[in-house]
Length: 274
Ligand SMILES: [Fe+2]
Figure 1 (cartoon, rainbow, N blue to C red):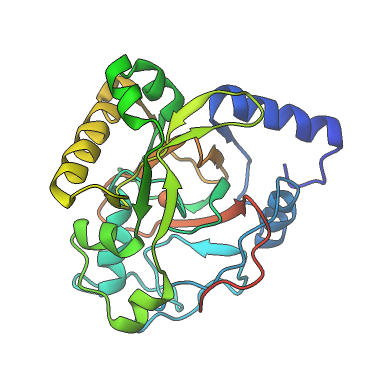
Figure 2 (figure 1 turned 30 degrees about the vertical axis):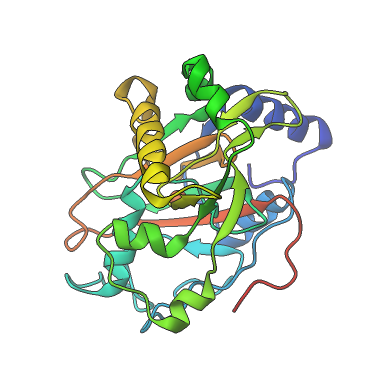
C-alpha cells in the first residue's frame, strides 16, 4: 500500500471501507513514516494538527501528520507508571471514535504497527451502522434531530486521567455533532457517539447521561465487536464516522508498543487550535 495507488484502486478501497468499515492490510515490514503519510494523503485531506499540550511531552515522530500512539517518550524509553502521558493514553481504552471532539471530524484513521507487545494490546472495533440498524424503532425516533457535545477532556477524565490544566483544556475545545450520521455515499445511518460525549444539546445533564450510557451499553455488546490482533507491519484503516474503537490493555510499563496514526478529515483544516 506504500506505492501511489491508481484511481481505480483507491475507488475499490473506498468501496471496501463502505462495505466493511474496518480493513486490515498486512506488510512484511512497517511502513516508513513517509510511505504512511503519502498513502493516507490519497484518501482525503489529512490532519496536521498539533498534539494536545500535555505537559512534558517531547516529539518522538517528527511529522505533524502522524499521531504517536506509542507508550514511549522521545528517547524511546517506556513511560513510567504515574506519568500523566501514560494516564492520558490509557483513556484510549474507552470506546471512542477519533477526533469526534473536533468540529471537522476525522474520516479515515490509518494505524500502522511498528512494535507490538508479546501479549495484549488488541484493538477492538464496532460497526455503528449495524448498531443503529439494531436499535428499537422507539429509540431511533428519540434520536431524530439530537445534537451531542464531544469533549476530549471529558473522556480523559472518565478514563482515569488527571484534571487538565487550563492550557490543555483550551487546546481542545468541545465540538457538536448530530447523533445520527448518514453516509453520503451509501445512505446508511450510523450512531455517532463515543466516550467523548459530554452532553446532549438542550437536555438536562442527568437525562443526557442516561440516554448516552444506554446507547453505549447497547452498542458495545460483545456480539458487535471485532478484535484485531496486531502483527508488525499491519496497517488497519477504519472509518471514524461509522465505527467505534478502543485500545485494550497490555503490560504498558514493561513492553513497548509503537503504533503511528495518520488521520484524514472531512475537510482541510488550516488552523487547528494551538
Ligand atoms: Fe483512537
